[in-house]
Image 1 (spheres, rainbow, N blue to C red):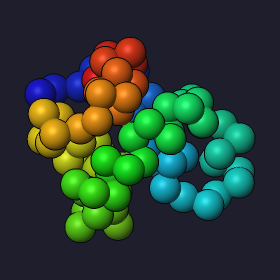
Image 2 (tube, helix red, strand yellow):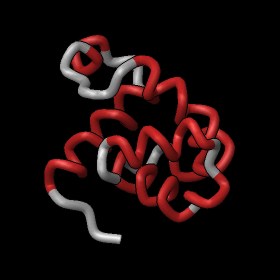
Image 3 (spheres, rainbow, N blue to C red):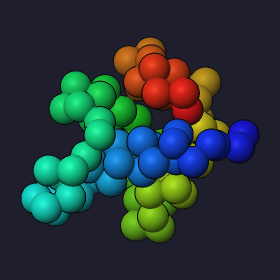
Image 4 (tube, rainbow, N blue to C red):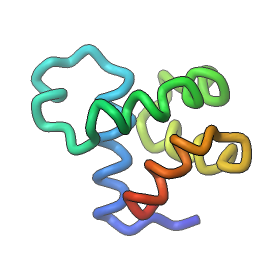
Length: 82
């Protein structure tokens, strides 16, 4: 599945903000706390092995496991066109 640049931008912001402690970046994130909370358990469960390989790898992992994701995380991805 190919992502458009705007979708990639949101996805990177959502995933990065969810899994980093960078206060400076967190101030510029696009995803809401609710969005982050919706996907964090799925990232930990399905994408733990790739969490240190970059945001796009994590997003790709979520997409690969889309059928297994909780409905809340699926809704966040769909809401943002991912």
